[in-house]
Amino acid sequence: MHFLTFDEYLGQIAASGRAYWKKSASERWEYLAAAMGMAQVYMPESLLEIGSAGLKCSRDSICIDTNRDFPAEVYHDICEVPWPFKDKEFDMVLALQVFEHLKGHQRESFQEVKRVSKSFILSIPYKWKRDPGNCHNNLSESDLYAWTGMHPNCMAIVGHPRRLRLVARYAFE
Image (spheres, rainbow, N blue to C red):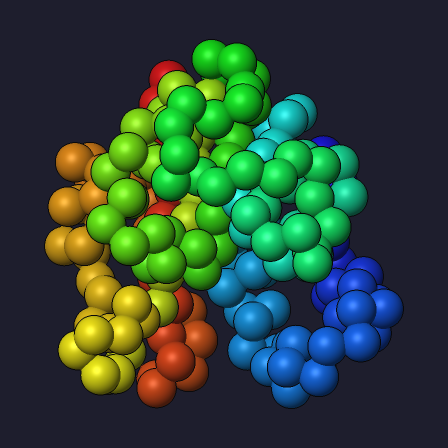
């Protein structure tokens, strides 16, 4: 599995033409690099990326997204189960800055992650102070536990103090 280098990541951003990604490239790289570092330890041969918005962490991965404006191999809403994959089809699933957007469907989606993969890495905004109705507001380890019913095998908090991300890895086998 080939994970992106920083230069490849910047190349993807440049090719996308999205000003938002250019503006936050270094900040985003911190949690992407943390997630890819956790993934590389286990050398997955198959990887599913959820909602990468066209910025995949590996050119060898399969991407699932709901938004047809972004390139993906599979278009499917992950809140709708079952997903169109076989049991344990993937060694690993990545969902970076995605689960907070699932509007109460995190538990069902996590169960599908467990069904289709052997391990899972996700990132969420960590303790951001936002409007209480904002999906990014004040998320922490307790939210992960509420969504998964599990404690992660490893976890890191990365980023700048006002924009921290929690990156967590779960192993199922």
